[in-house]
Image 1 (tube, each protein chain N blue to C red):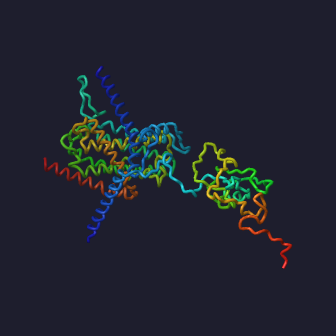
Image 2: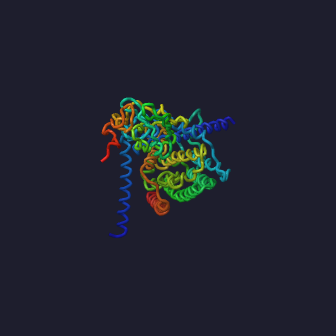
Image 3: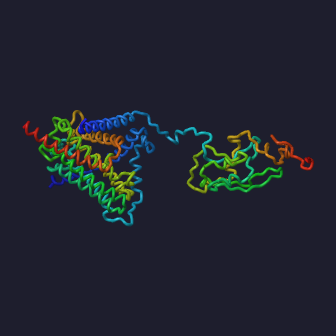
Length: 330
Length: 185
């Protein structure tokens, strides 16, 4: 009984810590993005709220919360209200299977430093990222606005196309690690990170994951210059904020997953495991901001051509080559 | 060259182009931002840039405005209004003069129309208000005690009207009026 209760409390503590860290990082990732993007464009970025604009996320949060929550009269109310939570929740839930350290031993109890070590963790992530499409597509549809609908449709088409490349790019990793569990995948990389043996797979994963998180150059669903703001045109206040949080949590999840699958997860010398994972996550996020500051948005046909004609065949060939090499080496 | 070779070359140029883009943005990271931090850093504006309107005075410190209504007539948004009056010495002046800066588009046509250089636009552009009615400027708000861009100009030294400056024909570049009765052939 006591074991059950202590396990429950432990789970809640881990939930709280991870959720708090994620949301805090999401807020400051927005700040970092604005700041770094500004420097890439020879600007200063936010520098009014506090020193170096460090209070900007707090100001933004206050603004979002106090803004009017507008629901268009013609909108499909229940779905309209639900869509942003789907986006934010799926992004947050993906972190549940990411390991951020070796198991700790406190008072004779083994505490795994992962919220839940699912043996199908990878499939869990794919399932959630597929569910995330619903938030985008339904949000666009329920707004009953043409821009939103176009954004939602684009989002659905893009995410479904890139899901395929995303899944296929990780098959070699699973083949190497011999497990779907993210903990096992990280443990299998204790010697060397998989980016050294699977660079092609890494590139395909990174590109398609960026398309999944709707980042520039793949931000067609929210293309400002064409669609207003795409699927979240009609959203305001904290509901828009949830879409926003979802996007930035997605960036972190993408960073964490890239770290877990290709950069050795929490493995690293000198620093504690948790810090290593954080460093890798932030590094990936910074690279994504750099990409955002450099590349223009793809055209819709280019997006589809890249997904179906380049990434999918490349990852299929990569699977075959990896399989052959594993077979030969033994 | 075969088609495949051409395609390979185009892919290569595309990749180098993307690489150049990344190099450019990376170099920008180490450049000083070109932003002007506005309220702290204020750029010196040209003297002829157009913003808040003033009513200037002649070198003797008297009002230049003769209330001729030209500025009011030329104003495309009708933001200038006044009432003309005349002093005992023959000088005209505006009994009241009002500019609604809530309407003014700072086009500068009033300044161009003014025959006495009285109405002038200054580079002072920072006049935002919470209450739009505080943007209605009366004569005393508009008047300044200098000559502005044309400091030495004194209208009544040239004007063909009799004032305390002198009778008709006594002004600069002016000859005495012709006596029509003695001008017979």
